[in-house]
Image 1 (cartoon, rainbow, N blue to C red):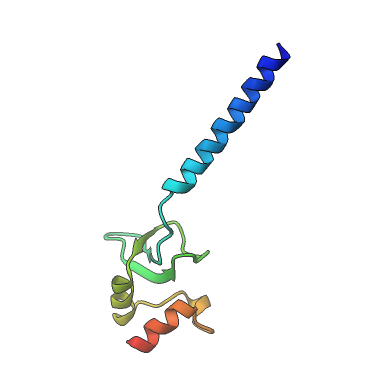
Image 2: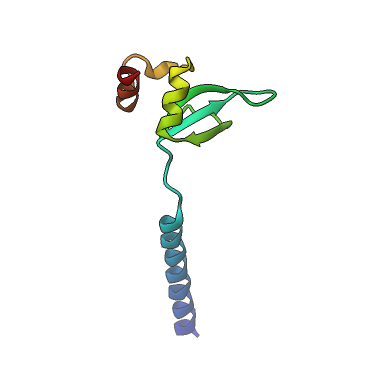
Length: 97
């Protein structure tokens, strides 16, 4: 009786660990850039954020480097908290424009 309960507990723990490992392997990569979207018709872009930014908000979508560069060149502001000093990945964008 005790031995079967111990075996069952070990099997459960191994199954949970296998599920965690599977989750780590299939998790999508964090995007390099995020655009924060506004409220209303068409949900216009509001700000450009780095992919790991804590202040990106809930209305957002991942964008690639070219789209981030295009949005910044069109006058869309980066996150104000990152303007001084600029985020290291954003510095290259500003100097390349």
